Length: 355
Length: 258
Ligand SMILES: Nc1ncnc2c1ncn2[C@@H]1O[C@H](COP(=O)(O)OP(=O)(O)OP(=O)(O)O)[C@@H](O)[C@H]1O
Ligand SMILES: [Mg+2]
Image (tube, rainbow over the protein chains, first blue to last red):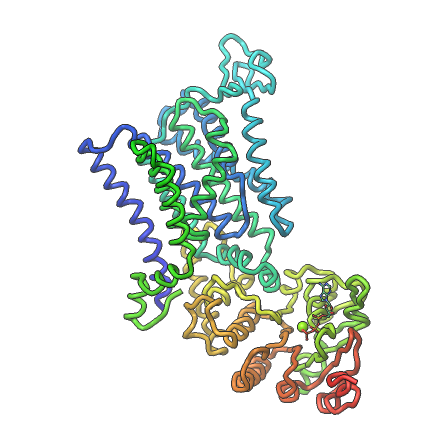
């Protein structure tokens, strides 16, 4: 059967798109055709794309609602930056240091995903939405109040202020409360961002097309039927949710290493950010990985590109939102797409229908 | 065959559950022998589906015991009851609608073929080997139900009759000892029903399956069930050989009303 190749073709299109965009951007940059502003957007774009893909794993593939994705990103950002800051002298080979920071960010965020999912995912209903919403806010606030210092005697922690760390003279403040972490090595760049996007895609797409992924999607489609054929529902819910959180952590590491100073601000890690990522997923089509990537890119670029047209910006933004909604969800347009998609044409020529 | 029939596979005693004031299932007993095709019938609302939900752990019984092949499965979780060997279908079809027909069956194979998450993500050799075996196994089952040409369709896009068949294929994939079918012929036309009867018989013989089925279609029941239990208002009205039961005046009254 040509089922496997067909899936591969589909996945390859997605990888190809990412690589093509990367190549085009690199060429444009080398000809000096990309503005400073635009160049500054490249890494954030990668971050949003990773966030959108990873949230789609929870929302579209597992079928649970999470409103705290930015919280996991925040954990990854701080865990990774913390690690990089204390090892910046010990590990001078920056790719290795950044690699380790990414692993740590992913593990910390994934572990918290596991901790939160553990009690919540046992229940049926939208408890996850409520708990993740609270979690995101709590994480942000805790980090804002957290002081961590390092001197000869080791680490010092405080939740009140810098002075109560009681550091020696040679000691260094690593996390400075609401001022966050200052002086993280700037290891992020567009190339690394693209590599991480590809890695995220690779993990999510391959997971979906595996034994575990089928179990996860079966829970989404019909939980009772899933149990009736012996699927360990809680286990697979936890797996999907933790992987999703870990990947948000990776986006966080990319974020914190793109700035000199990472702060747990509401703008970066608050509720609005979580909702924005959710909007990428919903507009891109729930469960549609490629769609959520495109939505993330378009919705990030549009407001930036239309700064000149400030007066009409919100209007155009709204129109695009509506058009994308229609395109993804209207039954007529779905039917039209069914009939006119290239893949289906290929399928018809070969005389077989497709999934 | 006769030797097979000597041993009991399912042994249920005294099974009861109430919803609020309603005694939906009241002191239900049943013994199904290995290899038997057993029918559970009764008017609408009699409690038949509730019996299936009790047997599969969807509901916890207030009283009673369920033994499968000598093992007490009364208070196990749904998942573990399936692992112990009970497969079922649902009256209101429950397929994984956004998965392909093939994948529906492959989810059913989940606990019989293993590779871990990393082997799956990184497409290691074990992934390829096991997926190949799973595909072969799944296609074998799809062939039994004449669904192999629809393998790549979304399950939700199948016509009704085929959805019913796919549900049976999916649960057979878990390799159960006992198959519970809840109104497998509901919504099928006479031709499809006839075909389904053949398939059910085939499954029993080919897989040496024990089947307990709920059905309103008396032609199907009379045609393939060897023994019947009749439920009415949660209580067992009678059980016995098919012909005997279907001709009993109490059963006829229960169905036609007073
Ligand atoms: N979860 C529940 N909560 C409350 N009442 C229930 C529940 N499940 C079933 N019942 C009630 O129990 C009774 C038996 O229902 P059940 O679905 O078992 O009937 P049935 O014999 O399968 O009928 P049908 O032939 O129509 O499928 C009905 O009165 C039904 O309303
Ligand atoms: Mg019923």
